[in-house]
Length: 155
Image (cartoon, rainbow, N blue to C red):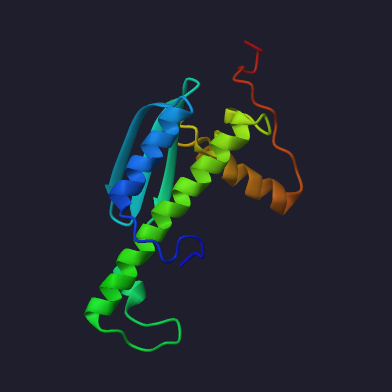
């Protein structure tokens, strides 16, 4: 589990509300939260960009034993799991606030701070498109061809 807010008592629902308020304060629209097995997504629109941040949620089975390898009672494992979920949500709020404040202060831009999380027309994030190419460039040392959306005739 992360260090930030590792002892928080704030519920995930309260943190989601705090995220919504923070996003609205900085001009975001169309806010939503979606959860699925092992993941939660925060979606919003800002500057005509659709953004989706995904956070991996811890699995309850990861808390059956302590970090020292000792077995936990089921109730203790469940409480550790719930605590880790609360911590993860608070860390996400912190990350969002930091990005938005950097934008507000002129340190960065919306595009730079949220580039990896921009949802493209095909429903995938920009990072889903770029990371495989980045890994290939790192492995081979070769730059990919610049693709501007033109066909072979330049149209």
